[in-house]
Image (cartoon, rainbow, N blue to C red):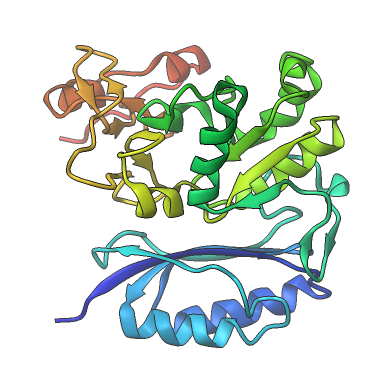
Length: 303
């Protein structure tokens, strides 16, 4: 029986012809029967794909041949073969939608002016040496942090990545500018950009975790500075790094501890709420506050 996996990777490098790269990536992924999402821009590539181990190996091996992609860090995790509904390969202005493509400078060695990369062990060493002076800064959307985050982390109240620029410009985090700030996100790509945006706004000592939460969790699980589960953008919805994982999420209906999410009854709902298994059916039958405020209503059920 074929073994299925999921690969997660990104690479920042100048791409002279994003459309040509898109067409090549589409052909490669279709050749190896992969599903998932690939984003291409003038700044590089960002991808999460699922398939069999052998097919993914062939795809990754070929993708590494592109100039600037040879040394990209590819993260592997278990898949089911049905983790993504289809293949999507798109050209966009940014690999991550911060809404600031003109602020980003990318050279052959990656983003210019980004935070200093730290391995998981170096993160722990920094905290051991400087204690409470160190600030963990969550670079994800706020709902992702509901089920897992670094101990004592600052979690900005943002619904989308695009909200971060306004958050940074608001001045509410200016008190952190004199402290060591460790940015973190799922696989590292959002923090590549976020750390550069922070540095450009006067944060003097900014770090990012090599490989993001994924690499840290693979190294330490929940035995060190990470707590809870990791939200992921596929059918799994979340992953736990070890059997000792304690759910941090609280069901919006009964307050039970959980790491599961549900959409509401509106077919257009994109608001994932933390909901336990016991309340899932009830949650799926309701219209969430966001959809209610927008006037969205469930479609009638056909007889």
